[in-house]
Amino acid sequence: MDDARAALARYFGYEDFREGQRFIVDAVLAGRDALGVMPTGAGKSMCYQIPGIVLPGLALVVSPLVSLMSDQVHALIDAGVRGAFINSTLTPNQQRIAMNRAIEGTYKIMYVAPERLADPAFREFIAQVHVPLIAIDEAHCVSQWGQDFRPSYLEIRDFIESFDVRPTVVALTATATERVRGDICAMLGLRDPATIVTGFDRPNLTFSVERLDAKMKRRRVAAYIAEHPRESGIIYCNKRKEVDDLADWLASQGVATARYHAGMTTIERQESQQRFIDDDALVMVATNAFGMGIDKSNVRYVIHHNMPKSIEAYYQEAGRAGRDGEPSECLLLWNDGDTSTCRYFIDRVGMNDGVDEDEIERVQAVQRRMLDWMLGYCRTTGCLRAYILKYFGEEFAGRGAADGRGPEGGCGNCSNCLGDFETVDVTDVAKACVRCVLELHGSFGKSMIADIVRGSKAKRLLEGGLDRLSCYGTVNDSAGLVKDVIELLASQDLLSISDGTYPVVEAGPRVMEAEAEGFSFSMKKVKHARPAVAPEHAAAAFGASGSGDADLFERLRALRKRLADEQGIPPYVVFSDKTLHDMCARMPRNADEFLMVHGVGERKLERYGSAFMDEIAAFSVER
Image (cartoon, rainbow, N blue to C red; front, side, top):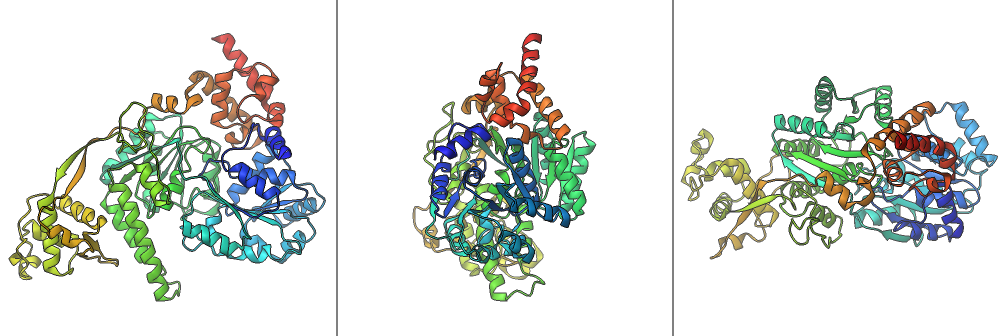
């Protein structure tokens, strides 16, 4: 372990391992398989990079996207570690050169895509190399229960078992429920793995949910970007057309914007992604085709322009903010139209794929349950962080708001914990809806029930004699409120909403409670939603992030960009925002002081120390 800690300090500038890292590294160095479930930004890559440096031979990293390989190899080389990757972006000759150098012992770590493992030429090459460790990044991709299932991951086990001397295997992921974790161990053939789940909480992220119509969403996005003009962010949309429309509009407003979706050519997507990674475009507007494997650490916010289809998808996408541990924000904008879009996509699962109908129905049922959880997140008035952690099977102890606001047991730093709510008695509406469902025997959807209890004069309703029901015309509230009450009743098992293209409302297992004497039902409505955290509160909550001089930070950021452009690498590969903030706080004047800065190792000192210390000295003189 001493060798591992020395490598951590020498190459990456960290004094010690974080929670979970030490456990995984210990297991791997002892030759034991391991499974690590650690939140984004927790340093999962250290769990295989450090053993890869320390162990003799070539560590193989299986990664799903070429963009991640390229970025991480750049970062390794910049830190002084001999790394390489083999993927389709290299010519056949470049691939041969890389493999020959690996055989000669030039590299310590090599990244490959899972599809590469089945290539006979690659297997012939790997048979000539000592491989002590195979790391599986984004390991949840092997599970059909995960939201990023990739069939190519199913071939990994066969590759592992093809070795005469089986390497140690470490599987890592940021988002995996208990069921997915079981799948990972089984499908990869992990042997008695040392397993650690460090928790899914990302304390540096703040969460906000706002229900807005389509026009107001665009205004909200524009206002947010205007409030964060120098910060890098991602805006996710569900449809390609929304991506193009929003990206065009933001560009017309003078925002340096990139876009990314499957309708673009490969070259267009690569160029757009590179502009974002290099900080030439601060805002990326994209579908969920963008982001997995993007190692850009200084994304300060993620805005979801639409509601995703699951908590797993949302948390993975939102988790692309603040990978460097700095305070960052996750804002979700939604409306009922988003729900319809998600249901549409679910109904199209398996179409034209020749998949068995029973399998399609099973997958659709799972996805509808996941969508119900996502809707619950949008509608809940409880702590948003606690809701997410509960989904992943983790209890949140609560820490309370820094200023004493927010409910007990909440995080004190999400829009719900800091929002003002009023409790509205909707007992009469709830009883009318339940009575209507019982009289109709579960034959109609939410809209028809709302029309009936509100006394609609619609022709189809009158011709069907539905105006003769006892519940007809007993409610004076809006259709929107009635539908919200139905959703809330369903979330508490008093009613049930069926699956399918045209879901109907049926009686739930607890429906008779609504018929009992003394039944009451209420819902909370937002009176005033406050931003999840003010900038000064974020700085106070997370320490050094807010320390140092803002003007100096901008100068160091400009220097970082210039040095990165000269080398053709992303700015965050030079130094993270967290490192720049620490420089601002410490104002290092010599090599020893520079090595004390977070994330500075010997190679970084050698390569960049003089330039940054000169800039700091010049700033001090001018000030």
